[in-house]
Image (cartoon, rainbow, N blue to C red):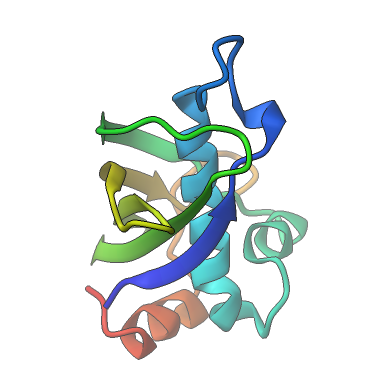
Length: 138
């Protein structure tokens, strides 16, 4: 079941033409991912919590389709769904829509691998798996 995160496009998210700079969509995906997993860390910032424990969750593959531009001040709704979770990896889908109209703006998938300080794959924490199950995903 998709988890929804409200996004406001900031001026710093846009290019010289006033449109959202496309890599910023992937920044919003990370914002949504952190919001999704707050349940796993009792409201604390998930990726910072894991980083302090010696782990990170880098993206290893990403794809996106862009359908409509956003501009500074636009409100958007990001839906994050975990499609697949393995021992040390997960793949999420994202869909971004204009909040005022529901118009589709961008969508895609990103795969991540949970790694330790040596950058070796390590099992996802059980609380992440519990969070995924609680949200009805994967």
